[in-house]
Image 1 (cartoon, rainbow, N blue to C red):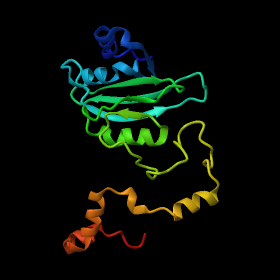
Image 2 (cartoon, rainbow, N blue to C red):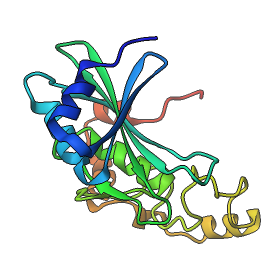
Image 3 (cartoon, rainbow, N blue to C red):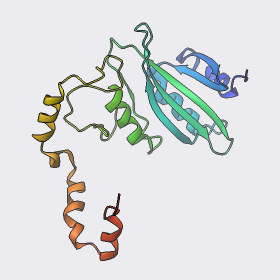
Image 4 (tube, rainbow, N blue to C red):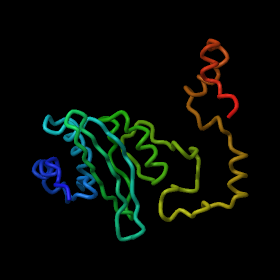
Length: 202
């Protein structure tokens, strides 16, 4: 069994009761932190000279079948200079609002990761600059597909799903910037048009 990362001990010393517990699973150190301290903890891990976890590998969420267990938001961190990994977990009680502070101000790459967690699990990231669905369409009304209470075939019948899809105005799901790019397509150079054109024969 691998030893606990020194970063877990450093976090406990720095943040005290905000760190709930630490453990090693499959060789990876996991540190559980209270929601209210999540942003401060992650900022310290990114910027402190002794840590420098400057690469956010992933943000995801986990919901267990056991209703007694909380839903977890998971941050996978990597220190490029030290070649060290660390996993931070935030436990969210299902009966309460599922929200946590955004980390887009720390890592720009968190933008789409947080949108995916919102889309699939319904976790809101307070302060996110553009928290909207990224995989499902914006007015998708069946809920969050990776939640355990989500029906296998969706909440609506296939006929209703088809009706909604066919009656929808697709343009309203794009930003003005995206629509402007689409309108400008005919005025792009021939070379650029060829690069953007769908591949033939697929």
